[in-house]
Length: 101
Image (cartoon, rainbow, N blue to C red):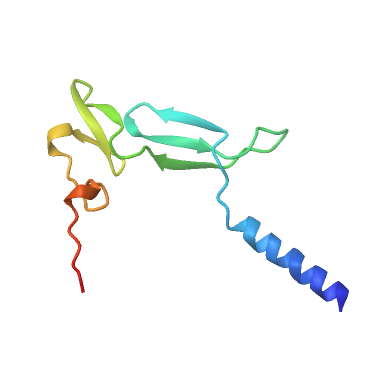
């Protein structure tokens, strides 16, 4: 009985640990795409290439639109700051109205 409880606890810890995304050890810029970067998840080892993923910078990060104009990153693309749409989750809390039931 005790052994089965210990094994069950270890299995729960294993599943909880597998749910966590690996963090970036190093962020590599992608020059033509200013709002994207390569995320390196593991160290370089002998005869083993680390895992890489393409990630997006946070919305509102400054960038250069066509290399000349100021812009902001939005969903992985550099757009003009004037044309940046504001979604409900981006809007400030004071603009939200609450209905009383």
